[in-house]
Length: 491
Image 1: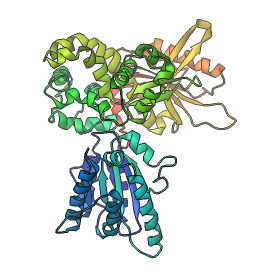
Image 2 (image 1 turned 90 degrees about the horizontal axis):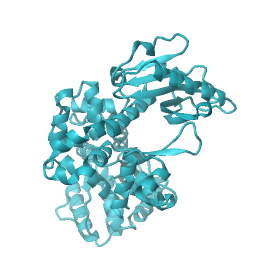
Image 3 (image 1 turned 90 degrees about the vertical axis):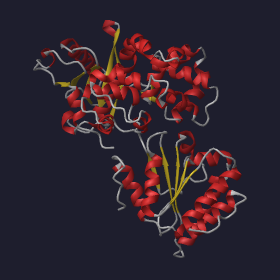
Image 4 (image 1 turned 180 degrees about the vertical axis):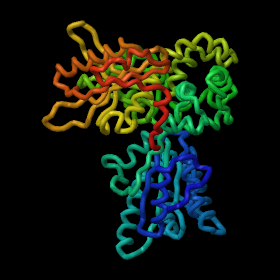
């Protein structure tokens, strides 16, 4: 196994796969695909892998085909120690040359930001397909082949690279997605030990590792420093983080008419999470925003989540916390923030931050916790974790379930409900919350769900009244902030 450099924080899962790929260099030709949203450390990982193994790292840029070919030739010459870079008129020439000399390297060939190349030169994936097919025939004769890693941040492009009838479909030996750090790991990365501060800080920057560099390693000193930290960093016009949320959308391939996309994100951030609600907010018909929703999903900026208790009903959630913060806090007051009036804006919008950013984000962290919690807490490994609405016809109301955990489906048997949960960031939870969950459990049982072992779970950022766990008739659990952080998910 290739040793992971000390400067790479965590990423053991990703490095393990990349290391095994690199260890097979010198054998048959192989293709790996690495993707993930920007700022997650993909380049950092792949540069380190190339250095450790003696491979070739080429970072593509937005350039013409001619310039890209010249830059690629320079990188090849340096890696193979050629005194003079080769000259390529087309990618057909460049790829054939790469496959002829790439096998002589002791490490893999990494082409980073591959979408920059394929957008300008659409034939490139087909050229690679042809050469991999030729290399497969050569491998039968015992000839070693190139080990190629293609990497990119444009998820819409990378997602199509191996899909459907794409030229490279079926050719890949490795596919790795580099995700943001899970919330407990993100706290460790930032050196945050207070869970209340961890939730608040994660609600702003999420688990994207590059954002610590963006703020020059400025870490909030404690819960009392959080407001000042927000003013020093994300609301500071001199900080790279200040405009980052706007760039995240603009950088994605396929995004045109960015005003409509921003309005869609603003709708979701503001609580209009259904397709109809989003369309109404934007001022379009639901059918008119289908393309925009699809593009945002392909970009990894939006998630579509099914209601676990209402078939065919779904809500949209923004996948990047910084975008939620921008849409709720920054975008409505952008002019004031640009002129350096962040302190006044923050005082005014802080209640909105608590209600529309921090509260919903806490609910999401609770769902994440339920998905990764130790199996003894739920009795078994969950099949599905999400949210849902339980209709109460007798009372003509609905019960929102923030954290619903279902067992894996078993054909012919009722679906088992492992846990029904409610999450409150700023409220001390009491028996009323348990009663609401109990009512939802009984309604689901009447609909045919198996709720005999359902745990009624309260998640709170403010604490619990003793009445929450006083009952002896039901299985009730109270999850504190400390418990939320005690068992980090495996990255």
